[in-house]
Length: 167
Image (cartoon, rainbow, N blue to C red; front, side, top):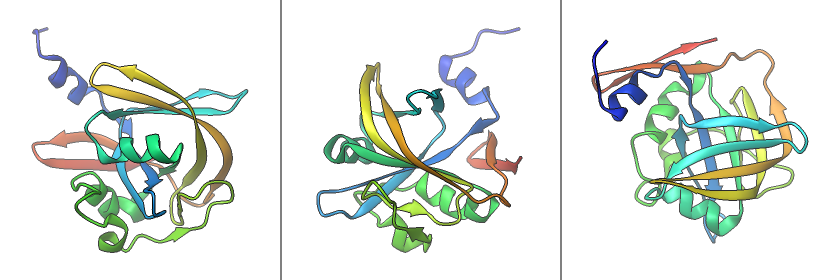
């Protein structure tokens, strides 16, 4: 066993689920990102948490709109997942560039990703400062599933190439 940096240890901590985190700006235009730091955190009330960098654009959108959607990807969304994880929403319209299909949510203005395995509509329940990140806890208002789709996991980052596998 050898001593390594926290960054190197976190990078080795795979597989991890990556999710799309979607929110809207003041004009109701959607943007989003992928996040590997996410978790279910309560059934009653139903809560889901995601940890986002204090620097990211999606963090600002969630703080403004007080809502977000968590969409769990599958193999169909792999190219979109890579785009959402490598571009900045304040510079690129990720939805137009990826041609990702969305559908209207029932309770929030942020769109659902039509082909995602799971979608969770969330209203902001709590915001927790956590070092260089902020943990957003969302109260789940509604959930959707595409029964025939598996979940895509981030297996490892081999250099600059992400490797995904469905389960």
